[in-house]
Structures are given as structure tokens and as C-alpha cells.
Length: 128
Image (cartoon, rainbow, N blue to C red; front, side, top):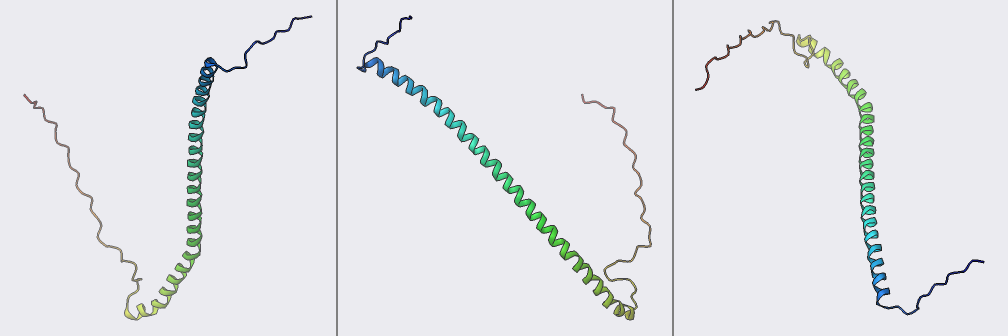
């Protein structure tokens, strides 16, 4: 049969016990402070990512609303323009103007290209 070991310690706390407990408390506090700092940084990063995601979502929603509005308005504007031109055509015909007032007649003169310039020769003089 194996002999059992018995622990011999006194129940009276002394100065050595207080010293060891304070060292343990300092070590635990340092470790928890580091963990708290890391947790705070991680939480801030998560919040920043979430805010960026919300901003992107809001931008996408606004862009979709604009596209939907454009799809509704463009056909109406085009229809209004065509109706306006159709009603204005008889009046323009009576005045003798065949072209639409929004379009300019094509220019009959051809545009000439600018003459090419030759490069200046490099100077061979040196400072001195």
C-alpha cells in the first residue's frame, strides 16, 4: 500500500501569503486588461464594418430608387417631346421652317486641319 502524502500548511495567513496573493492579482489584472483592450478593438472593428455595410446598402437602395424613377419618367418625357413636335410641326410648316427648332442645320464649310509644326533642333551649346 502506497503511503499518502499529507499537506502541512497553517491556516493563519501571514505576510508571505499576502505578497503571493497580490502578485497573482497583478498578473490576472494585467492579463484581463490586455483581453479587454483586444475585445474593445474587435468590437470597434465589427461596428465599423457594420456601419460600412449599412452605408453600401443605403447607396444601393437609393441607386435602385433612382433607376426605377428614371424608368418611369423617361417614357413620359419622350412622349411629351414627340407630342410637342407633332403639334408644333404645322405651325413651323406655315412659317416656312422645315427643320426642328432644337436642331441646328449642318455646316456647309469643311473644317481644315491645323498645319503641322516641325520640331526645333536641339541646342548643342553647353553652359560654361
